[in-house]
Image 1 (cartoon, rainbow, N blue to C red):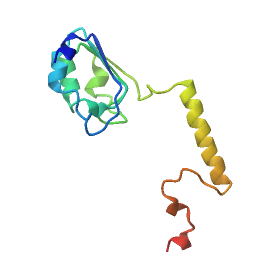
Image 2: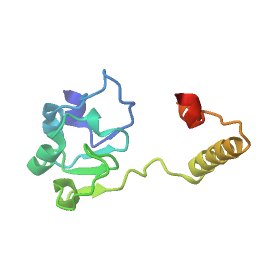
Image 3: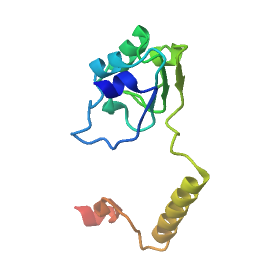
Image 4: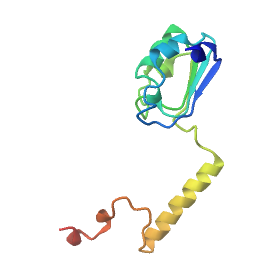
Length: 136
């Protein structure tokens, strides 16, 4: 309880597993200072569903910076989080860096090259690559 009451900034960086789902509750958010900032670039379900919008409307925490949302992609321009003066939203790109792009694109290129050479790699469901007559 004291953790949420004393922090000026809380930034979530946890993996989403059963033990962390809803780990931040409405009661936790209500304990935050009206001047506190909550940052979530990890996973939206770390916060109890619906609790963040309610808490921000109540002014505790006073601000939020978000890169993840309960529903993604967040397309509804009328969504409360997109219309609050105390919230900064980005479109789930918080992980993006030049190095990350280089790693991802190199991996994708390697997979396409291997597939084109007839030796696909990292195939999750190889049965779909077999010819249609082989699947019968």
